[in-house]
Each structure stands twice: as structure tokens, then as C-alpha cells.
Amino acid sequence: MFRQLGLPAWVALYMVAIPIAVIVGVSVADPTAPTSLLTLAMIVGLGLAPVILRFYHESLIAAWNSALVVFFLPGRPTLAMALVALTVLMAVVNRAMVRRPIMLPAKSVTAPLLVLAAIMLITAALTGGIAGRAFGGEMWGARRYAGAFFGVIGFFALISRQIPVERVNLIGGLFLLSAVTSAIGDLAYAMGWEWPFLILSTDVALLQAISEYIGSFVRLTGVCWAAWAVLNFLMLRYGISGILDLSRPWRMLFAIAAFGGTMLGGYRSYIVLTALLFTLLFFLEGLHRTKVLAITLGLSGLFIAALLPNIRSMPLAVQRSLSILPLVDVDPVARHDATGTLDWRFEMWRAVFPEVPRYLWLGKGFGYSGTDYYLTQEAHRRGLLRASYEDTIISGNYHNGFLTLIIPFGVWGLGAFLWFSVASIRALSRNYRYGDPRLRIFNRFLLASFLTRFIFYWSVYGQFDLDMASFTGLVGLSISLNGGILSARASAREAAAPESETPPPALAPELKPA
Image (cartoon, rainbow, N blue to C red; front, side, top):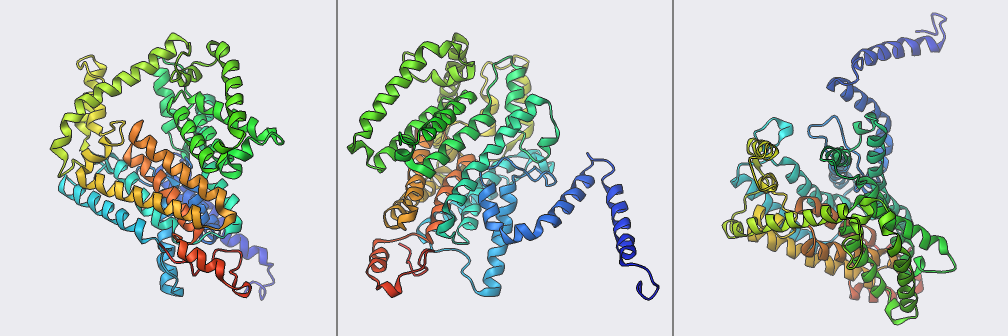
């Protein structure tokens, strides 16, 4: 019609674009209004839709450990939670349209996860349901349920597709280094920026704000998490032998710098985690039978000898982290802060452990009264309560892996989680032993990392709703990369196959699950 009238094509374009621009401009006139944020999110989402639909599985892996949130949804869920829903939907669509299996074979791990999910649902139904502050309910706890179910459902999303073996380094980097986004929260808070928290979790900034409010020293939690991610990536990419390779000293320097960055958070637990992971990888690589053991001990001794005389000149957060080491002279402020939190936990555990028999057969779930929680906090703030852990007990954040599992879900939840853990260790071990040789470093790291998390969860610190995603992410990534849970029989059959029947570079699809 426009050509018949003698008008150029750009006139038609402007007649469509200008009204759309006006409508969008009016919709986002108030940037803080929920409708404006939703409109912006829809525009950005439509623009990114082709990329997300093409790389939805990779996007989920990249977002798994990131601090990104979906700001326009109630409760500001993490981006990984939203991508889990998309990945599961795409798996169902692929199953319906191209008859692709909805997930890779891993029955030995999926069975305990399904049982654990059923226990959580039944417990929630018998203890008041799932409600939260974001939905205007007086009962809170939906966020903790969301974290636990994200770990379970996210596992099935991860194993919905197989990852090509040639992309192992890229996938490992996306999975681990996405946690670097946590450091942006520390930077934004220090600079006084508000706009980054539109898409970032506010947890890191909240911890800094609390430290300032109570007059404590600065602890850079986001930097700590980011540095831990970099250190893990170096171990994944090069292994311990690669990091200690003296012909490439930059690797060791980067690892030492990353380890130092973890101590800026003031968490003694990251020294324990680093020691556990390093030791497990060291023995799995067989380095304890070589001269590398003597070299490592010598370098460690030199490092400690150089560190000890200069501890008092370090930031208080670093001194707090190092206070876990014996015979280390740290500032009394850092020592008192570290000792105080430890005493606080012991007092809380002494108060909570007598309650365990009460919840053996039917746990209390994650739900708790928001009113009770608020009133308890106010009472403590006004000096009406002696114990400072009463609000923590109400919310169920016991800082103990055993308590955060058995009190909410009883002996049934405890048994299901142990079943899942044993099955996961077995699956990770099989994939390490019988997997593609090109994946050996990757599979070794996943096995050592899972064992590190498992030991740490039961012996030092654990929070079931937060740690569940860490456990399922590691085993899910292993199954996705290896094409299932491998077995010695399948590995032997593949090795005995004639040259003409050798599978392509990607993992052989005929590998059978254990």
C-alpha cells in the first residue's frame, strides 16, 4: 500500500516504531514502579529469547552459582531458579516433539532425590504448608523450601542434556566462575551504587551493612566467594600437579592470590575447605608417592614462616580467618569476634539438641511464624532476652548440617539425604574411574569437591536448604558430561570394540548406567 502511494518503506517503519516507543516510554516513566520493571524485563527477555532458547542448558550451568536474581518475580528468586523451570520445560517439549529421553540414565541417584522431595512435600503439607513473606503470609519459610527444591529439580534439569566432551573447559568455567558476580555486590555497596542490586542478590550488601551497624570490621563476603570460585577453577583446570608446576609459576601465584582473597571474608571455614579439597586432590592424583610431597611441604613451610611475623599488619578479616590456626598471634579484636561466634553456636546447639527426639518421626518443616521471629528480634534488641540465638532457633538456621536436616524433616529426611549422598559418591567415583580419559581431571575434581562438601557439611558447618544445590550441582554436572553413570562393563566393552566401531569424540551413547 505504501509503495502504491509512493511513500518510502521507512515511513511504515516509523508508523510502527513510534507508537511502540511511546507506549514503552509511558510504561517505564517511573523506574521504581513494579509495572515499569516488568515492562523492562519483558523487553530484555524478548531480545534475549533466541539466545536463551538456543543455549538454555548452558545458561543454567552458567547461572548455577551466580548472584543474579529475577527482580520482577515475588521474592526475587535467583536466575538459576528461573532457568531450571525453562530447562525442565524444554526437556518435556523435546520429549514430546523428537522423542528424546527427558533425562540421562541415573536411576541410582534420582531415586533417593525423588524420595527426599516426597518427604519434604509431605512434611510441608502436615506442618502448615509452604508460605512466605513475599506472598503476604504470616508464616514464613518459603525461601528455604525454594532453596531445597531448587537443588532437587535443578539436578533433573542438569541431566536433561549431555554436554559434549570438547566443551569441558568452557562448561567448567561457566559453572564455577559465575560466582565471581558476588564480588560486584561488595563493590556496589562500597561505592554507594544502588542500581546493580536490581539484578544482584542483596545478601552480600546486607552482611556489610550489619557489620557497620554493630561497629565490627569489614568482611568482604562477596570477594571471598569470588576468590574461592577462582581457586576452584584453577584446581579444575590444571589439577594440583599443574598448579605446582614450577615451569609455570604464574599458576601457583594465581592460586596463592585466590586463597588470600578467600580470607578477606573473615571465614575460618574457607581455610578448612581449601585444606580438605587440596588434600583429597593431592592423594587422588597420587602425588603423595612422588617427590612433589616434599616440595609441597617445603613451600608450605616457607609460606608460613613468611606469614607469621606479618599477621598483625594484615586486615582484621584476614586475621579472623587465620585465627583457626594454632599458635598464631592475631589481633585481640579478630580473636574475640571469632571466639564469640563459636561460643554462640555451641550455646545454640546445647539448647537445640534436646529437641531432636521430638521431631524424629515428623519434622517441623521450614515454616515458622514471622510474628514470633520479629518480636524475638525486637526483644533481643531491647535487652529483654539474654540468649542472642532465639531468633535463629525460630527460623531454623542452626548452622549445623545434622540439625538443619533432622529437625525439619525427621529421620526420614536424614535417611533419604544419606542415601542420596552415598549414591552420588558412588556415581562420581564410577565416572572418574571409567570415564573418558579427556575428562579425568574434571571428574577427579567433581569427586573431590563433593567429598569435601560432604565432610564439611557433617563436621564443620551445614545448611541443608543452601547446600543441597551444591551437592546436586556437582553430581548433576558429572552425569551430564559423562552421559550417565558409567560402569566397568561398559568401559571394557568400549575398549574391546574394533577400530571401525570406535565412538566419535563425544561420549558413546551406548554407555549403560550402573
